[in-house]
Image 1 (spheres, helix red, strand yellow):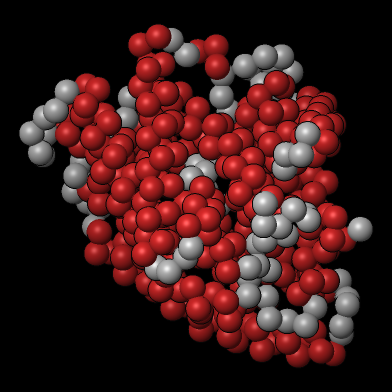
Image 2: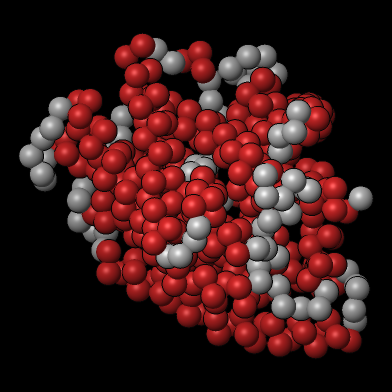
Length: 398
């Protein structure tokens, strides 16, 4: 793809994403829903005006990294400490229930097999895909609703981050069944080391940035340093510790969240995310699917896969939230907030293809789950929050 064609596709994505985002807002739905639908329309499912490429995938990855940095930046450390234990329990339930349900779904459709057989492990891998949680869309929806930093929003965010770490361990364990060189102990150690390193370096970096922030308040150098720190931690997390890059980006935001100018930093960072990287990321979700390729042989499984994927997260996280003391509606919000799948599910599926634990035909099922959960989650959250808090963040700003 040449540079001129890239410019054409970027112009189309930005215009359509914003137009459909505004249309979604008019229809009382979050903007991200419109941006995802724009990707569906522009992609191979309908018009075919935009094709996925490594360049667009890179921009989309930057978009989700910046979004997760912004989420970390808006995290209330005190509230995070209060929800830490509860978030861990919710995350564990959010991994265990979908893993079991996904495995049983595959075995029920294609036949049960002895534990330890290749057919059984393929079912386990289907369940592994369902363990992934992509919090980026939920984050954007909660930001629009003005509930990202309250108790429920913080719990969802914390549980999703922990869910990501547990999901990586589950993925490594399942792959180790096929590749003996994978060592779950090594992965666990590297994950712990990353968070230990983040805590130590984070404190040092915070003290340095605090002095700079106090000496040079409201200057662009602090947001620039924050952007560099975001990319650095995202790279280090993925490259050296095997932790998802979005986790590193979130940690970078948490490090800077206690600075006096955290709101100023967030505003500066949000400009780039809102104008370019955000629309490309959300539109790319729609671009990565082609509903025309669905055939009757995989359609039934895909429908069941989507239903089980959504319900298992709601049930697992919702029931555990209720056990942790959240009231009925709050527990339901947490369960629904955890049901989105995105780039993490795609990464897991691609890993499965690479080690021959997943047939390529199931990739359509994964894409369909991502599309449905990405569109449905913001709408459901808006409905759940509307009765209690009808005033949105945008209305408050006005």
